[in-house]
Length: 247
Length: 247
DNA sequence: ACGACGTTTCGGCCGCCGCCGAAGGATCCC
DNA sequence: GGGATCCTTCGGCGGCGGCCGAAACGTCGT
Image (cartoon, rainbow over all chains, first blue to last red; front, side):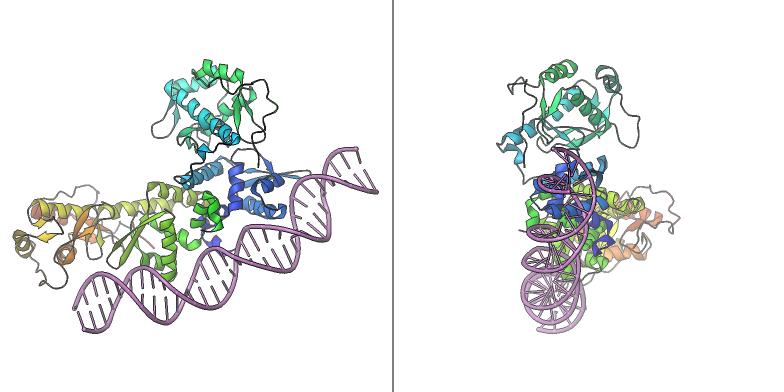
């Protein structure tokens, strides 16, 4: 369509070159499907504006949409796109963004534990990755790779099936933007995260990507990985109300 | 500065969102340092236009520049940036693998030996400079200077006449872009390079600046300077099959 | 000293693109 | 049906940004 398209790289970059579209993609990094209206509000633009942006992102292949009734649900197209956005964000945020120490409750919760597309991030994500490594389950030399013991740990201790080796690598490093270190991503990171969520070991705080480790989760992680997730955070018996996310 | 900067991800993407700037980065993927004019021509824009783009890329941290005389040399800032550009290009272009491979082959040839303006550069250029120095022919203190023995070496051993001392210095250091060290430039560097080319000790690869040391060149350099240029690179008797450069 | 060359600065032009609000479907719930 | 909610389409506005050519600057080589 436009002149930009003569160079595919430029066309792709142009999709992310707009602050509003970039905000959309960053929000969608939590791996969940958002409605167009939610995204519009979270970015602070009119619904009409958001709608056009989202259409461009969809036709550009970065997002996929799913219509349900009067709702339009949007999510990142796949894990590769998520990886790309994370890489760019990490590179861009590099030096000039000590967002880490913002004293808001939401920021603290995010830094503590959150999802990053479909796997764990934040202090929890890094701690789990470190624990796996310390126990010889995960090797971190060139990239990430599960050891034999690691494969067995997933199968018997965690008791979840790992997908057959397909296009997506089992284990890969993902740069954590609060910890500035790598945590476990890839297929193994995804099944680990969903297992923790399914069993109620971690629960989502509000509607965002922040997570909270429950009492049962704390015990389970201690037993499975020797992980000390700290007994802080008071009232564990209040899974419903935890509106730490917003705008 | 602009509104885009409110979201670092968008600011970074905006740098690559312009076809001309994207072309620059893709061209620079070969790891060489290009002059501003070369980049302008390769992208088909005016020198003034290219200059502004390049300044933006430099201040944006994607490129680094180094000035030498009236030239402005530009290269990708580091390997991380190169990785980022490759990732984006791979995602955008879908299937443009051969470009990368050819680029890396070209990059390897360039790093090995090439001309820099009118003298030798790359590993070969630095090695020759080191050999000259080790034999007491070249002094590298403040600048570069040929010793008495060095003058004689050029006249009798290499058997080429050095130009009479004019405006152009006989020997001067020139920063090597791949080796990050200095190699011999100036009038002596120029006559040395043209002598090697004339005698077939080095030949140009394709139409670019990359060079290849021939079998005879290897022997001659070993005898003249005690230089070991490595007997690798297989078939020396096949000058045609070296199409590492292009476009 | 001079000319050639690579690069930069400066105006100025033009087009694209992001933004909005109002109006018009579409869907769900009552 | 009526009304609320979610989204899209359509003009229209404003501004950023890419492009060029001409002129100035610095460097190099003769």
